[in-house]
Image 1 (cartoon, one colour):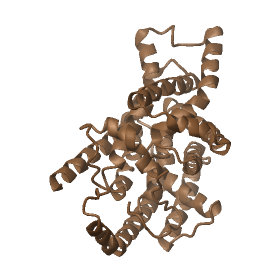
Image 2 (cartoon, one colour; image 1 turned 180 degrees about the vertical axis):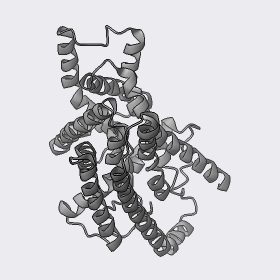
Image 3 (cartoon, rainbow, N blue to C red; image 1 turned 90 degrees about the horizontal axis):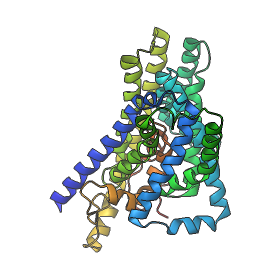
Image 4 (cartoon, rainbow, N blue to C red; image 1 turned 120 degrees about the horizontal axis):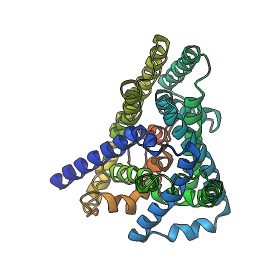
Length: 384
């Protein structure tokens, strides 16, 4: 069992690194789709993402959720809202990358945990711990400094952060697995996106059929670029501790930031460095507080968990899902992504950034039944 657990942990870690690595490096992909404009790229992403996840769901034969969803108008309405919000998020991100604003886009996913916490206080009336208050205060100061540095509010960052935080909040209410949720949202997006592409073609503006086979293949691959990191994340979420995912989440905006500065050569005057330094300080405070809370909760729950395992010697450890037989974790991730629904709920919307809000929201809660009632920014794992 120990060997199996260690192997599962390595598989989960590799899948986590793959997911966040792909999200972090995706700014290299969007420029390859030029001369297509941001809106055409966005429409292709919607259409081809639905095609890809539909094939994936056919392979694993997971369609029961669709009938249930159609019989629940409230949840269906929330899916429509989620699709609308993520459309804004995807579109702004693609435009930002292809317009030379990679650094500002990365900032949006650095500050997303802070925005998620602020929304928890304002909308859900949650309570903040002192360290969380300090992190939000430092983050607000960072936005002020960056506003001075840019000569305007960092609207790209704020739009990405608030849209993704809103998306995560809505998805928490929908309570669908990551792959299923992506299928539902892109189904909502499909007809408007396809209609736009047909309109663009009728007016001679569609690049899909005029720029060669290679360009068409790249546009079609937007579905794979959207769904594959989500599948890898699902494989990671059921195998590694949430505290590990909470740290891995920062890889994506870090990669994006480094690409913006070192590869795309975007300017970073001193005032922008100061603003980013404040954001990073806020994230250090937030992550440190989350890890301390996780350790305290784990120590408090340890005796109860040990007793329950002793009473049920055949039970499977939550961190060791021995029933997964796919060595790469892909099929298992699609089939069991509901087990980590709260973690993966925001991931299908990632426009190339990390699932910062989704993981930050749960990184301080151990995946143990009976965990304490969370405070602001802390959402327990839920199973439908």
